[in-house]
Image (cartoon, rainbow, N blue to C red; front, top):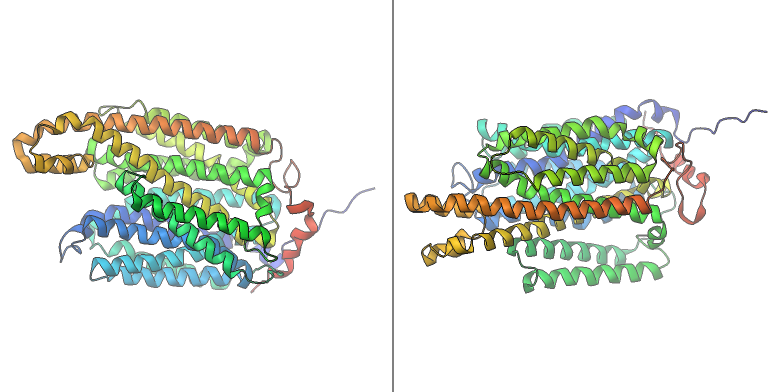
Length: 543
């Protein structure tokens, strides 16, 4: 007796155009992620006095980045909830429109203050769009195809991070600083038209009542926490009141959020999700890998440009191996998962990332440049075998109608982990560098000592100002920076090994993915596939 195959959960009209839908989602993802890496290249030009730039101070430049980060991180979770409740396509379209308009306004900003404000508005658009992309993938692909689709999604993130500096470098060389924002506008227009035509609407059919108290506590907690982390990194001192006070406020607000969500009848976030070992371990691995990776990107830029003397465009090109490796391996990570399981695949990926950091822990100012290319390939391959399987594990452990909230949790942990990495590892780098330069700086005039000890770039600026006398600073500065980079790299090795252990011991062994060889991922409270299929009625084709 033969058993009939289970009917597909996705309507046929949507299933036929699923890869075209994925293409439009990747386009949205590219423009949102790429924008931040492009901006880093334009900082020097924006700091130049008008008419070339805006004459932005160091504080202005920091806030042009931080305003986006704070708003983006603070609204990610809320945006995922809104998408589940009112429609993910609506959230995606609204986010892209806001992002495009804010990009246009940023390009035309007449002062640093305007740029900071428009960048915050871009953060609103990015926060609306980002969770919706992954949530829509979960609602247009069958379970068996989700790992491949998520692999492509994850590869696109890596590609955007790498091609941002290259694109920014080309634009700055040929156009004015505003072009790094203006380039977003035509891409957004194409993406919005494609989304309106191709992407189906989907939402939670039973969202329950709104939870305004929970939403407010989550926003306050995330914004305060990220602000405190950023401030601590800027000051290289987390004991300063400007750093620990907002950090403590954020932690208290998030603890209150968890307490309230466990007791309210209609929680914004079902805290019981975290009792699922797969879900908890997966979001922890996401946070750990971005903690280490974003931290190393902080010193990698200075090593390539300041120590090795490469331009911003050349530095961007040296990031390509990392992106290429992710683009090649991420969509194929599911094949490794099918053979080895989620735990072994993610742990192996984290070990590869750790090996990349080992390389950074031993390179010198004269190491062959091909070593950086190899390290990029190794780390990119490692990330490609971590992000897709853990993202599939996160999303597959939840009911499909909660895809927006699940995506928001995934992105929130990534954002918090990355911010912590830049702040904590950046502070370690600054402290070790300053200690390494302490004796050398004693030979400088008093008025230059504090400034020269801030960073490698600050030391080089003082050396240029002092002329021939300042040349005595250059060699010790390079040595101190290389030592500080080694300390941070080995610290990142340890963090990556912790991530590998979490993946190995807490992620499932043979469960490849929902619907894959290992069987179906666990659903909350033992709910079966019937609950997940309930989202089918909410995915409406707009053919």
